[in-house]
Amino acid sequence: MSKMSSLQGKMRQHTIIVMTLLFLFITGYLLTQLKVQFLSFFAGLSVSFLNLWTTYYLAKVVGKVADQKRKHSVLPFILAGFGYLIRIVLALSVVYWALINPDTLNVLLVIAGISLIYAIIMLDMLFQFMRKR
Image 1 (cartoon, rainbow, N blue to C red):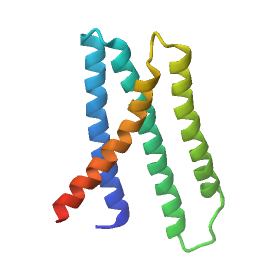
Image 2 (spheres, rainbow, N blue to C red; image 1 turned 60 degrees about the vertical axis):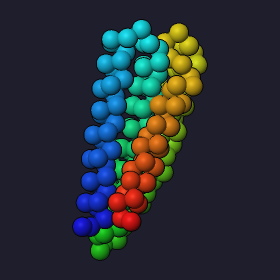
Image 3 (cartoon, rainbow, N blue to C red; image 1 turned 180 degrees about the vertical axis):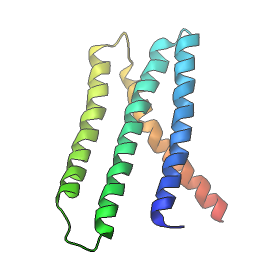
């Protein structure tokens, strides 16, 4: 299996997990009284997943450019740099939104939602390591 298809498989797996969690957060928001909590987790995880998808997409673009035998354009590498800036701005904007709207979003739970994608990735790596042993 090539590295790109492995990357695509991981992204597909993470997408399924995140979409399931987002569905649960929306369901919790609609069916319980914990609206601020579920909406905060939803906002944080949504932005975090968007950041992960941006990283995946730019890695794909840069990988395709690196595989080509001809002279490389600098544009994909510049876009990858801007991708980092975009990810930081997205995370800061959702935290800022939580700070200015404390009755709608809880800042700590938004940050926990942003961090949740990293927990998913670490657990996936742990399960993969345990399967190989």
